[in-house]
Image (cartoon, helix red, strand yellow):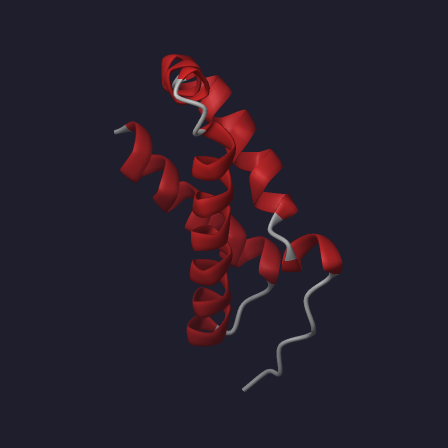
Length: 85
């Protein structure tokens, strides 16, 4: 079993996923972004989803013993399918 390396500060506060999710939503469902911004809940939604993705990524790394980029890619694709399909 591989030992996980400590997360960088960027990953600890989910900023990696915050920026990624913002771009994915812009590309795939801009009306969703606008609705959430009107309701003033967009930042909270993005931060909640980023935390969820980070948790899922950590579990995926642990269960499958893969690198962060691989786990992140898989988890992000699963999120996109749930959100935009």
